[in-house]
Structure formats: C-alpha cells, structure tokens
Image (cartoon, rainbow, N blue to C red; front, side):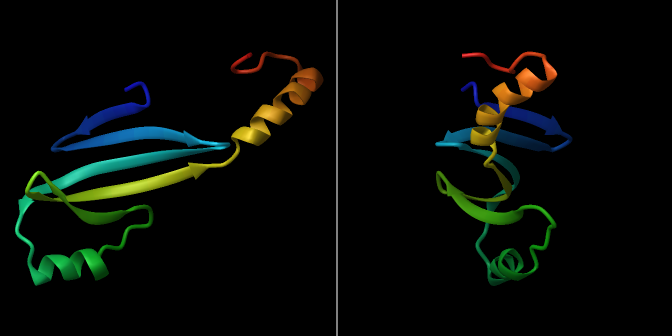
Length: 102
C-alpha cells in the first residue's frame, strides 16, 4: 500500500500509515510491543491507569487469538484545504511552484 510505511529499531517495528478524509489527513503510528500475553488483572490495570506517555498510548488487541500490546499515536492534519486554497495566492506573491499542480 502506497500510504503505509514501516521502520525498525532494535526489537521494535513501527507501522505508519496515512489516511485522508475530506480535507483532513490522519497519520497513525502503531508499534507492537509484546505478543502472546496472558490477560491478567495487573496487565489490565497497567494499560488502564499506568500508561502515561506524552504522545500516544498503549492498548491491547486480540490478533488471531494472540493478545498483543501495541503503542499507538494518531495525528490529525486539518490544513489541506487551507494549503490548497492559499497556495495559488502565495505562489503569485512569492513565486515558485505549487507542490502538486493539478
């Protein structure tokens, strides 16, 4: 898929994809952390209450019968309409080329 990217660092692999809806784009980063987990009260408490990151959060997902802990962070970019409508005026004022003509 042309909107999906991955990168690896040590034991971690990040999956990054971009989705567009109307004039907004969403960039989602998911990083599987642990797999084949057992669902325990301690695990649930940690994910629910002790999962403090400045950006993103941990969550649990059942993938084909395997409980996986993943880190997720989603960004919303709501400036596509502004960039599209302001681009021609900025081009006229400063020169240059629009990133994508058409």
